[in-house]
Length: 109
Ligand SMILES: [Zn+2]
Ligand SMILES: [Zn+2]
Figure 1 (cartoon, helix red, strand yellow):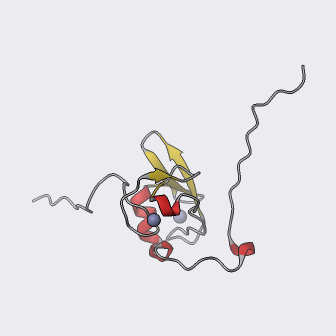
Figure 2: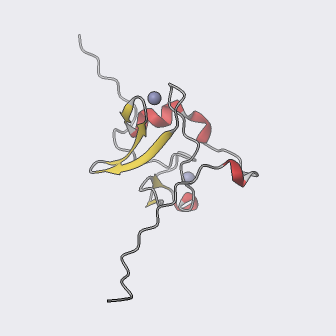
């Protein structure tokens, strides 16, 4: 008999930081609540020990591991239960930041 594993909702509609219903999205495209709109998923680790990159696809946010490939959003969160209710980072140098600067401005011809 096939038993389907159900983890609440299949869609990532809850804020990964507090578990509240997500009403917004952060810069990574991750659904978050209003209070955590400015918060980014960082220091996410894969089960293999590599860092996880947050990516955004057609079906929403997901993770990418250098050695395991793509990892589903919910699985990535399961691997990192510590991000929930994490205390505010007191050491900013520890935070791994992904800052993508795109410039479409053309000021010269
Ligand atoms: Zn939240
Ligand atoms: Zn991995």
